[in-house]
Image (cartoon, rainbow, N blue to C red; front, side):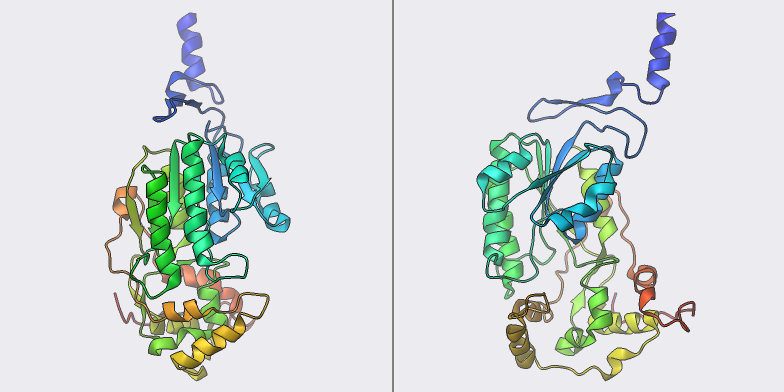
Length: 358
């Protein structure tokens, strides 16, 4: 009879068993998973996602919540934090207001967590937050506080083109932030994704609405775009795998030019809008970008103009080590940009342009 009860406890959903328990390597804290699959499960992990209200962060939080993880959501804007309400059961999504400049608030966000993700970043500078304060000082603060609070695993998201020698301040501070993170948290995992695209990105949607900004450098700049869901899945999988203290490069599967991407977006939206878009000289584009900084919404910054002239880093991807096959952009571009079609052409077939680079 006792043997039968043990057998039933192992196969019955929602029951806890010995194989559901793991011990975290650094803190020796036991983590026990139980429950049915999905939002109602309990993975046993408590995770903090800094930068959760950004493009990548929303997808990562959704995937972590589906795994039954309790997710701490540090936020600055209450309206942006409301997005996470339907992503988990009651008590699974814990929202906490924070300031990246406050050690005390950072510590409050990580003191119960065994995994911390740092996705914080800015594409443009503001009067309150420049690249240095976010990518370097902010990243260092999160890493040092996480180490001091005994966090078992830190995953820091950088960029594929991070380099101390880059003429782009964005890429330079990303590289400097990596060094500060490694110094403060030596076992941190660094993730370097390429430019990400998705439904609400500032990449494909920007090409569809503002093609002239992508004709800089005669549209010859080479880029390796990656699907945001592939990157989010990689980050979510790191929670359940042994900690790896190294840097992973996550470029897209193909190297493309802006010229090809303009043709692709035109084919998908059935609008040859970029054919009449002017080619703006670099000096004029930089001057326009400087004037655009006076607006209270993001348009384009001078550093973004600089990045339009820089090819993506030609480094091999580490997707095979992570067990994920990255997605090609063409079928997904059709999925995300179909809404730009007119009523008459909404269901029209699409002929993808020939590849100009691979």
